[in-house]
Image 1 (tube, rainbow, N blue to C red):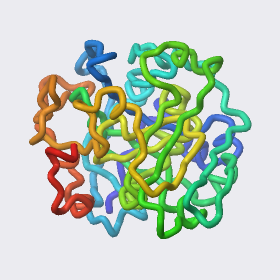
Image 2: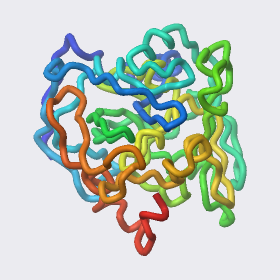
Image 3: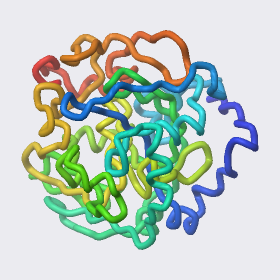
Length: 324
């Protein structure tokens, strides 16, 4: 595979930063996720077209068997500025362009993640423990969010399956439930009733174990900042933005389908699966097209966000209008 073009040095930090254990512990992991329901939806204010600096990838890995060594979509990447200054993170604010400022003082020192439930070896991990499982690798993923806007993000992280393998799920485990930090002193948005806190999310076990499902550790050669979900978050590229839970403190293996925040907030709009499906419209907007941040005009939305070759078999025989 051809190597991606280098981003100019003034735009990024040396990639060694996110491989450095001390830097990882201090600054953490994250990603970008974006959603809204009819109960809390507000009109999007898109950044002006043309302001994004991009780098074109020359090669692409497309086979699912190659994802253990990274997965790169051959598309122009969204700028570091927009990835880190246009965010959904209601724990801080519902203002997408205000999350960076609202989360600027968020501290992650001493962060721990409990992995428990239907596993043979439950464990409370600190960030150093997590990093020891696997060194971060670059994954350039197309991320399409529920309101119809999208980004292309160069993550650093490793497959969630590697963490789950450590705790050894039992044969009774069928789903994975996730939970975000609950601390309104550090996350002032939790003082509002915009959602029921803490934020919770879930995947089927086979979805969680798929090699594309990522625990992210960095972006553009930088450790990820608070507004993107520090210190550790989930990235599921074939699902809407809300299947990217941030600031995770608990992962629990369970036998039955877990509750999720957006499914509880508006079950007629947000199903459990949350797959990108241009053939099934959201009740208040079409899923057929999307707005790439930094571009004018709209793009055609791809089935499973363009990852049908890798993940389509997970939903064989399912009615995706019912299981939306």
